[in-house]
Structures are given as C-alpha cells and as structure tokens.
Length: 552
Ligand code: AMP
Ligand code: MG
Image (tube, rainbow, N blue to C red; front, side):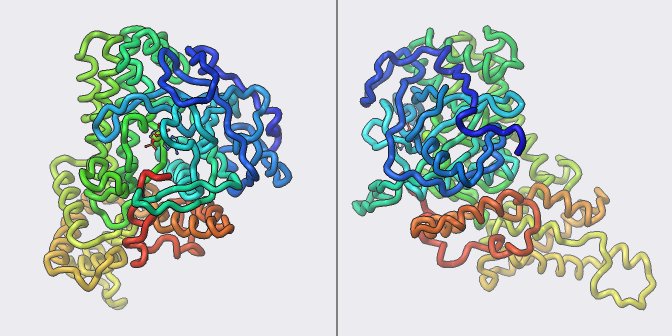
C-alpha cells in the first residue's frame, strides 16, 4: 500500500460545518434545534475499545494504510475516544415520516459525523460513528449501539456494496468494552449486551428528512441553504442552484432512488424501516436496522416485528413506499419552486424508470437478452406466482435456473445415435423434466409440493425454454450472464446471527469469514458451499433469523 497514510496524516476539509448554519448551543443536552443544520458534539469516551473487524477496501478509499500494529490506535479513533487533527464532530438535525406519520425532529441521535476526508483521487468521504454516545437529538434514548446490530450494519453495508447495490460503506467495527442494556423485543426482558461502534463512510449522510424538518417549520431560509449546499457539493454536475436546478435535482433523486430499489428487488433485500429519515438523498441504502434477506420468496415478508401489523415495509411494497417517500421530499422542496408540476413529473419519472429497469433486471435474472413486452411480462409474472406456491429459496432458485439446459444434448441420448437434429432439439418432455429436477434444491418442503406446482413449473419451463431458444444465446454464455446478476452468497439472516452469537462469546472470526465470503457474492466458492445452502429449520422462528426489532 504505497503512498497510503497513517491516521495522523488524513486530510479533513469540513464543508458541511463550514458552510451551513450551526446550532449555537454547545451543551450536549437533548433539545429542539431550530434554524440550524447541525449541532457540534463530541463522542463519549469508552472504556476499552477494541477493533474487531475492518474493511480494507474502505480504508483504501480513504487513502489509509492499516497495519496490525495500528489497530489499538485505530480502535481509539474509531470508537470516538480520540479525535484526529482536523476533525469537527457534529450531529445532523433532521425530521422524518415514520411509518407514514410525521414524527417531527429526529436527528442523529446516536450518529456523530467526525469530518469530511479528502481521500484517494480527491474523492470526499464523510466519516460517521454510530453508537458513540448521546447527542442533542437522542430524545429518550442512550445514543449507543450494541454488538448485535453493529455486526449486522457492518457486514450488510459491505455485502451490499460487493453485490453492486448503492450503499453507505462501513470502515470498522469496534467493541467499546462497555455493556449496554437492551430489551430486544420490548417485552420486559432487558439484558446487557456488549456495546459497539461502527464507522460508516459515505459522500454524505443527508436524508430526505434533513429537508423535511425545515419545510415543516416553515424555515425556508435554512431549507434553501441546505438545498443549495447539497446541489453544489453533492450534485456539482447539475450546475448552480436555482429554480431550474431544483427540478433537475429532484428528478435525479427520483432516478437514483428507483435504481436502488430495483437492486433491492434483484437481490431479495428488505430494508425494514423505510422511513423518510432513512432515505439517502444520494439514493444509497442507509441505516441498516431490522433489515432482512428473503430466504423463501415471499413479497409479503418483512423482517421487522415493529412493522408486523401493517407490513408497510414488506418486500413487495418497497417500490411504492420509495415513491411515497419521494412525494414527502417533493412537498418539502416545493416552497423553493412554487409549482407542483415538476414534482409530479419527477414522481411519474420514478414510476416509469422503476418499471422499465425492473423489467430489464428481471429479464437479466432469467437470462434473456432484453425484456420483450409481448412475451416476458406474462413469463415473469407467472414465475413470481409459482415461486409462492411452495416455499422456494429465492437465491438458490435463480442460481439453479442458470443451470437448466436448452441447447445441450440430452443426457439420455445414446452415444451411438447419429441423428443431429435430435441432438439440437432435445425431446421436450424429458428436457423439461430434467430441468425441473435441477431446481429441486430450492424447495424448503419438497415433500409438500403439489401436483399443481409441478405442473405449473413444467409448463413455465416449457415456455421459458422456447423463449430462450428465440434469443439463441448458448447455455454457457447465458449461465455466466445470469450468475453475474443472481448472487450465490447473500447475508442470510441466520448467517449474520451465527456470526453475532460467536462474537458475543468473544470470537469475532465469523464476521471476518462472512466479510471475505461476501466480497465475491457472484463467484462459486467451492470451499464455502455451506454458506450457500437453505436457511436451516432451526432458524425459521429464531429471533435475529426471521424476526428483528428496531431495538439496536
Ligand atoms: P432509526 O429508526 O434507527 O432510523 O432511528 C430513528 C431515530 O431514532 C433517529 O433519529 C435515530 O438517531 C434515533 N435513535 C435510534 N436509536 C437510538 C439510540 N439508541 N439512541 C439515540 N437515538 C436513537
Ligand atoms: Mg435512521
């Protein structure tokens, strides 16, 4: 790692605190903060910080070198115990709509931004500690985070990045050496859990809620300052801020948000808490809380027990919710434009782009050259309906689907047979039967599959094979393409929980193993097959594996 710096040499250039209005109050007490974008606040020192995992790629982005000898120093800085020269720590003021209702001021209740790093290639990155103590925005909570939720945030941020999903990143995971009390299911069973701090990294952590708070307070002056700042610094390609730029800016947020959601739908990710304070203005996945990954494909599934009643944030509802959230952002910026039309256009743009990109994405998932509306809408809808007839593992299914054969000779064709045409057009019934069998690994309850299921999957395979023949892409090429969009390895909820169980007992090795595994989610990793199998039966109802709460 040549030219990489040690911690002391990181260069900070803190535009956010330099250019935007600050809360004049410096006392760290909970309060309403008005006419200010942030409050200066220092992290609360912890007893025995210990670095238990870090992402070398993220260190590299910052231009940092991390040698084993640096770990204690690293732990001091990324627990918040020691500030580096040039850091200017602060918590942001924002509001948000939570579960559909305006919630007023929220803000960084347990996140403290340390400063903006000018990293490799002059790219800028905000460093943010999550769980480093209370801020003026902590309301009734403690500002801390536990190991359980920190492992989940650390691993998922990096897993999403390597899957190609827009996301905030995670640099490090540090144990604080202190205990934190949590009542995981809010049911009167509090327990002590190890405290931890994750250092998150993103160009900016600005959320929809950062704009909403000023609009809600009718503080148009501060709203305009934040919007102009954001356009100048995070969207410089849009040009100088002004009425026309506000429109193009909103349209861009609609597009990047659509792109992010299409990726979530591709990999089977359920965010779990799509409140407007958890929506990044850059279209990045942000705030990994009670998120989950679909094991069996079920559009109605949500991992979040807090949302179990209305299932507002269920997998299949995410596209609509993102649009609803964009509408709240539109309402917030509206006073700067005074005309609803460009916003309506933006929301429509979102819907159109989502639909178009979703179709393209689904076509790629099943290995088609492009989405053909005449045939593929029906083909894809029927597939998604079949996946719900019996518990079918989404990740395994699409991976196995790549292995079906269309152009290969039939296995049962006798070597002596010379009939070339029979080789190239295999007898249909047999082929469908073989191909159907290739999908068996994806079913959770193979013995409970119905005749209807087998009949519909075979009929579907017949249509699908015919559709593939139209494209005429040779099987090996189609397979390679499909495997590049259908991950083999995702952060299954139970895998994250196993890593947490071990880490809580003092062994963080599985966090490192999963980080390593998830660096190459599309590759076959034959020595790590055990991480690509179905969720085991014991995980079906276990906390952390199929149900999560907001308590973190
Ligand atoms: P979330 O649903 O996790 O995005 O959090 C919603 C709001 O609650 C945000 O303003 C968070 O900063 C705040 N919050 C969540 N957990 C804590 C905590 N342990 N201490 C202080 N604030 C918190
Ligand atoms: Mg949040």
